[in-house]
Structure formats: C-alpha cells, structure tokens
Image 1 (tube, rainbow, N blue to C red):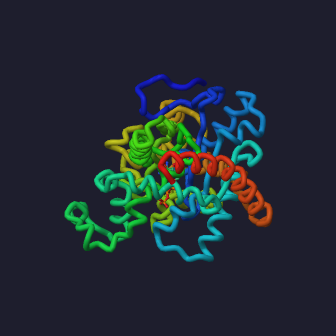
Image 2 (image 1 turned 180 degrees about the horizontal axis):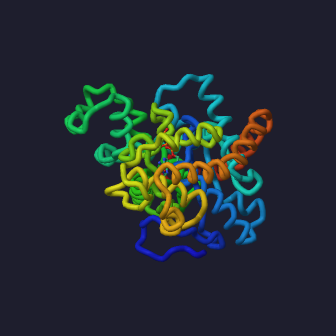
Image 3 (image 1 turned 90 degrees about the vertical axis):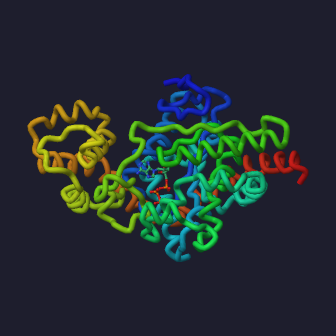
Length: 373
Ligand code: ATP
C-alpha cells in the first residue's frame, strides 16, 4: 500500500508507506481499563498493520523502532481520579494486552509515558502558546464531563466553567496529547475517529510552534484511520464504546471469556426487524454488530449481510459471538500467560522508555533552545 494522496491534513484511510524516510508514527492508549473491541479495531489493529508494513519495507529492528512509537499514556489517566494500586496494575495489564494482541517490542517502541519526563516538559511551552478558546472548542472533555456528572445536553450548553470544578488537566489534556506526538516529531497518528479533533488541534499547535520558532521544526501530524472508525456501545448505539463507560455490558473486552462474549452480544441492543442489514441511521444497533463482524473477519458488510440473509437476529448474534470468540480467545490465552510474568512486562516497558527517551531528549532540547530556554 502507499501513502494516500489527498488534501493536506485529511486523515489517511489507507496504510502509509514506511519506506518514506519522513514517516514516523506515534500513538497512545490510556491505561483506564481493559482494551475493548473499539480500541482494538479502531486503533491497535493499525499499530499491528504498521508493524507489518515495517517488515514489508524490510526495515531492521533499529529502523523499525525509530519509526513506530507506542505509549501507554498514564499521565492522561490522571485526568480522572485513580487509585494508585489499581493504576499500577492497569498499566501492566494494558502492556500485556497490547503484546498479546501481537505487538513485537523488538519491532517498535512500547513504553509508559510517565517514564519519559520530556512529555510534560514539552507540554508546558505548548500550553503557553495554545489559546484557551481552542481548548474550549474540544468536545471530548465535554462528553467525559457529561457522562461523569450525568448532565443533559442543555445543561452542558449552559455549563459555567468557572463554577464547575472542572480540573485544568481534563481541559488541557489535548495539549499534552499534542506534546506526545510532537516530542517524536511524528507525522502519522493511528487513532479512532473520536480523536480527529485532537489531531487537528495538534496540527494547529505544531504550526503555531513552528511560527514561533520561525522554522518548520515540527511536522504537521495526520491521523491514520482503520475501516472501523468508531464502534458504538452495545447498550446505547448512540454513544461510542468506551473503557470508562460505567456499564460493562456496553463493551466487549479482550479479557472477556467466551461465555461473557456470548452473553454481551445476546443482550446487545438491536431492533425488531429480523434480518441483519446495514443502515447506521435507521438501524444503529445491528449496523454496529455488522461493523464488529466485518472487523473481526475482514469480510465486507455486504458479504456478511448476504451470508446471513436468512438468519434472524438471534442466529446472527450467535454467529457473531462465535466469530468474536475465535479471534479473541488466542489473545486472551497469551494475555493470561503474560500476566504471570510481571518482570518481563516491566523490562519491556523500561527498555522502551530508554529508546523513547533517546529521541525525546534530543527533540526537546533542540526545541527548547529555539524557544530561548
Ligand atoms: P476512555 O473511556 O478511558 O477515554 P477509550 O475507550 O475512549 O478510553 P482511549 O484510551 O481514549 O480509549 O483511546 C485509545 C484509542 O482507541 C484511540 O485511538 C481512540 O481513538 C480509539 N478508540 C476508543 N474508543 C473507540 C471506539 N469506540 N471506536 C473506535 N476507536 C476507538
């Protein structure tokens, strides 16, 4: 595959070529719970595809590690209240799940964000440049706040930030996210659709920083999307599937047993029409299930609806559950094995941090000097 031509800044919907010497990938995931199918199909799948692309481009291990940089972003997790013991265990669990999904720590960098202090160091000068109005336009902190406080849309509209007790970290975390990407001078960011607004902001911040230091120091990053841009909650197909949704039936996690997967899919909200057809507007529930089926099998939605033209909803759900179990079970087995080896997980993250720091410290120092620090 090759880099998709197209207007500057538009997200890529095909895999970029890693033969391009300028291609550098950064992506992060929060250790805020078990990895779910939305994370896997929307984001982690592209981490794995890019790892394959590095092999196809015949990059050796050192070259691949300079291009593929993946982080468990624990600083971001602090934007929500965390229990320290739980957070430490969630970080290891996230590392284990990502490795069990197929990420090879010899072919990429996998590390914990808080192990590389330059992330927060770079965030500060970027915060000093970023206008509050840009952050105020971001929708994600609003929807997180809405879920947490149970606000109606109208209450959210009339929301008074000064009176709300909203923490500065939750409001400003898109700047830290921009720092995460720019610290590696990355130009490609595999994410789900919910992150597009933040990648757009990271571009704007990069352009502003470049203008400030009067040179193109930071490349302007672009998002890389998978075909599954946004999976929706199994319980409420109007909301995205999310790790921090208090309702566990809303998502399928890579840690779920076959019985849990069958039960969750059986209870997924659909409609009264019998055969599965794809119509996200009119039939959001069943369309979301078709997206999952397609992501798990690489069959197109059209092929799946044809395959299940005679199935009623119950039969379709059973078939989907089988498909999901077949894909997830090997990952879960490997995950259980990795969980018994915390020393190995810690050593992967420590080595990853050493490699990330090598790149980060040079870039931070150079940018700091340009800023007069
Ligand atoms: P949280 O609920 O704690 O915010 P999350 O489930 O939204 O977690 P993140 O850690 O914020 O997950 O995101 C990790 C990656 O997964 C990002 O690239 C994000 O775009 C992607 N992602 C998250 N949810 C979905 C979804 N429902 N569909 C597709 N991609 C998703």
